[in-house]
Length: 230
Image (cartoon, rainbow, N blue to C red; front, side, top):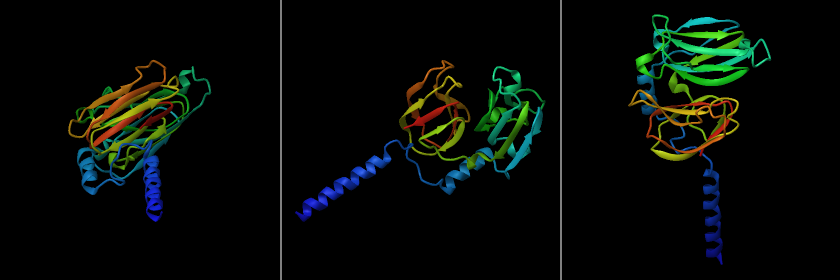
């Protein structure tokens, strides 16, 4: 009887562990190993976090060591009319000559809070960022290695780091009528991004089986809605 009880307890314990793992993000170390952080820092650099804010158009000249990074951005437009250009919020990358690099980390209409990356392709690292806005905006800058590890779910734009093994997962975006849903992956060893999943502006919910490449990588999720990677 005692052996039966112990065996049953073990089964319950294992089942509980398995249950607790359902829905979590692909496995990687709980904390970023120092050697892995060194790889991100070598690729994208390090700098002291800083904040810029304003209420109108502005050009932000980036320090030499901050031409790749993460921005935690917020914006509150002066109008509630989302069809008005006064509700638009853009953050565009500029090259050393003041021209566009072709990358627009943020481009939308309406109130916004999100985390985005810039300068993750070495061939078009920006010298400055151009902000187009009518309303209060704040941009908090930090180095790429400060971004959080990949999580199983979230809402809105986000940047996450993945240093685990190759993994196949289900990617979902709901209510994508709010904004295009897209998952982008930049491997440090490749220095260019690929797009594992996108709704291509269809305005429909998205569900797709994706393969995350072996890290280290930077994952950028552009979504105006709830998403999950499980």
